[in-house]
Length: 67
Image (cartoon, rainbow, N blue to C red; front, side, top):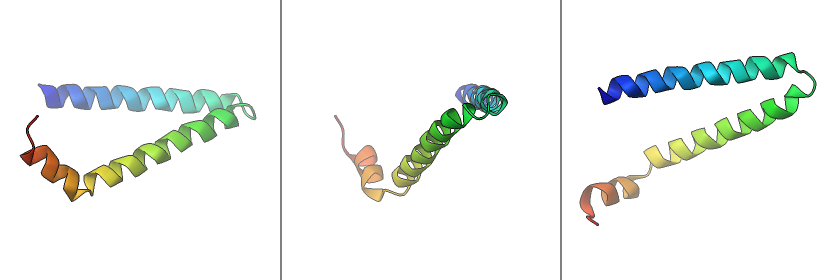
């Protein structure tokens, strides 16, 4: 059930972001400010996700260290 919820949440987020982008494009040139901010956050999120997935030290800590 949790995978279904995650997929559903992902579709909702993608739809919401799509509506945000469409609204910002409608408000050009003022929407350009929001688009730059939105794509900046997307870039940072991707960078952090790539760093986390590629970090073997964090994986070792998660699997072997008990709090």
